[in-house]
Length: 258
Image (cartoon, rainbow, N blue to C red; front, side, top):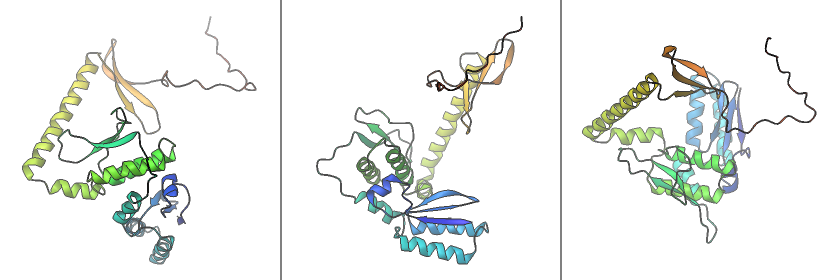
C-alpha cells in the first residue's frame, strides 16, 4: 500500500522555511521526501512500473501533491529556498567552496570559518547539497538560515541539478577531456589498490572494511599466516563506555580453567 503524507512536519529545514512538501511511503518502497510534482510523478511512475499501485491511485496521489502546494519542478523548489529572506546582519560560520582540483565535474565542500572541511562529503549536485543542508538543520548542527546561505552558494557555483544533469554535462565535454579524466581515474585507482595490497603483504598496515550494519573488519597479515584474513575488531576505544544503571545486575565473569 502506497501512502502520501502532506506537510508531515518531519523535515525541520523545510518547516522553518515554510515550504510545502510531502512524504511518500509504502510496504515495498523506501520513504521518500517529495518536494516537487516532477519528482512525485517520477516516483509514482516507478510504482506503476512495479505494479505497486494502479493508475487510479497514482492520479489520486498526484492530485493530493498538487493540493499540498509542492513546487512544480526542482528549479521552482530551489528558487523557493534561495529566495528565503535572511535576517539583517546575518553571518554564517560555514561556506561552500568549489574544489579546484581540476577534474571536469564541478564539485565542492562545506568548510568552517578556519577553512577546514566540515566533513569529507563531496557535493556534486544541488540535490546532494540540499540533502546535506537538511540533515545539518535537522540534526541541530546549523540553523535554517545557515542552510539557506550554504545552498545559495551552491546555486551560484552552478552545480548541476541532479545526477542526470551532471552526466549530461559530462558527456557534453570534448572527447579528449573525458578520455584524459577517465584514464587518470583508472591510474589513480590502480595505484591506490596496489599500494594498499603492498602494505598489507609487508605487514605495514591494515585495510579496514566497513559494513552497512556498522561492523568493521580489518584485513591484516599475521606472521604465522602470509595470507591476509578478516579479523573482526572491537568497538573503537574512543567510544564512551555504556554505563549500567544502579539496578542492573553485574555481568557474570567466566573463570579461567585451573
